[in-house]
Length: 301
Figure 1 (spheres, rainbow, N blue to C red):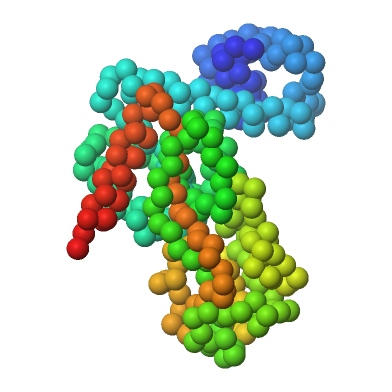
Figure 2: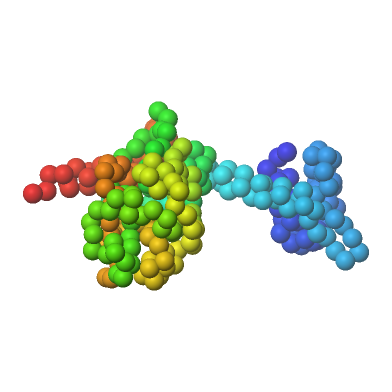
């Protein structure tokens, strides 16, 4: 299937009208109708229902349209990147972040990058853990930042550790645990653990529930919530404890107490990842910014 035929199909899928699609694509209606008919014959599926009330996508057509949009977006991104590499000046930096923990350092990295490359375009996307990794591997993202609970990294990925901290939990002001820095897992027996949905659903082979089991909390009920605000309110009400997203310790309500589990030596790393290779100059340059900033931080008195 050619890209031109794909564009014709997506135009009809957008307008659900062959006449409007033909105008948008600057071809005759008969030509675009013939192209769609040939595409359906090539695929062996019906993409559109053509009835007296108009044109509509079949379920197969709706799915195919979604996939075609993704393919075209990827193709256009590759064209832009190739042109940027060819002219050696223009850059497009596509960044992916996995949640709240990126708020501390990321704005400063972006500011430094823009100072060095003022003509570069920058796009920032917040996605789930799995979507970030998939986007990086499909070269839809140039650099991603996410927590590392046990990533299995291949040799074609370069990693920079941005921070490392002990796993923390939060509890409300009117519980026996308030004000404590360390708590044993026995003291948490039976308590509900609030876990923010999408914070770290698939963590390179180790999920947060696996981590809970490792520190003796495997039998605790886990309740998923959608936001940190929801988790904080439930904790303030004394309804349980919550796993704290990395980097958020200083951004919570004053009456919430933070504690770690006694004897737990596990540390959560926040890392930046990029694909190795000379092709993506934007990712290389952004990693240079991060690396130099980390080196400067090390040598500060």
